Length: 245
Image (cartoon, rainbow, N blue to C red; front, side):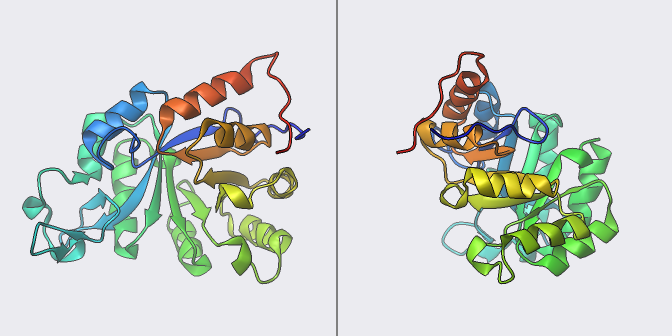
């Protein structure tokens, strides 16, 4: 049997990776709308910024067709029509979803915080990075924005417990690790320090169910319908215990 645990602040956030990327073009307005309809309570993406300071949501650091250019070298007015900027995200999708973004350009921090503040959603913006100094500098900029460490478990040279303690010292809210790195014991450890646990790489409903069962605080998947089904099943009073595989 896998011991059941609860997230720090139930229910767990269901982050749709790139929107509903399992069903629509990743990081498109269509994928974001579909993710909401399928039950996602959050969106996960990457954060870049244009030459004139407009943050946008996409994986690649480049835009364009055959002659690609770096996002940071292009003004927002010259972006392809299918690129979703943060302003267009808030205008089209709204401000009620949690937004978890991997910080790919530190120059995106200031405009992203300003936009989220303007749309009254700063406490639902999660900025993720592996570099501790980057996260600490962002925390000095804002006490409200959420911060996420993406340091791999193998890179926690002083051990997982010490990493959790440093996160608490630095006021970093959450740790994002691949599903395969999470166990009930590791979830309990981070919870002991008041840090949230996010799991990624969970495409199948059984994987999502196990993560919810051990008490993670958020799951990232490109299949929000599977996350929603797994969350509904886990919330039932008669939800069965899960067996170790």
